Length: 253
Image 1 (tube, rainbow, N blue to C red):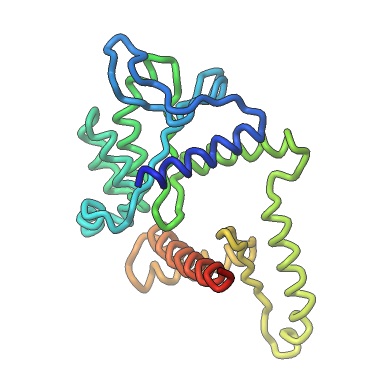
Image 2: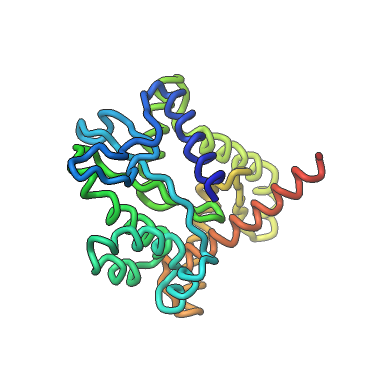
């Protein structure tokens, strides 16, 4: 578990350095008047949020964690929310309850727990706490997605490359599929809908729109919130893709 956490942290640090962002690793121990031994910053980035330093706290949560499974019985998709909520629970007893009412609650719960554990110390140090929560199957929490979007902007500027390189590749794939299939589909009275996915999990625009429609129908038939149905659908597709990637790698070994 520690190795997985450290590998993720080191990968993020490497991307930050490629974007010429100065970072410090594993910061925060004994820096406050209380001499707390907690370390809220796996990665500390200067002048990141409104002139404040950003304390990035990396965490990995599993949807199969016993506590998550228990919460899943009464909440929607509790895996990511559960991790965040445990952190918040230390300082705000209501956080866990609020997280349990939110769809996609596993990542959210983990973020809430991180805020609960770290916000006071970060505030004292003049930092902004940003939990980077990932589920063991690859889904990231909303705060991590926002942080990575900003990091991608920095990297694009520094390397003079488009921010969404994956998007350009997927659009080209969709275009090729349309060129190959549109004429025959039109003759048959069909509509060609390319479902293009990058090998690391990003979906093309047409694929995303189609899967959103599938999730909406799934939500109706299973009496689920649409957000939960969408989360479940993309999680299952991610697992299938990861397994296929693993088999492809093993065949080359």
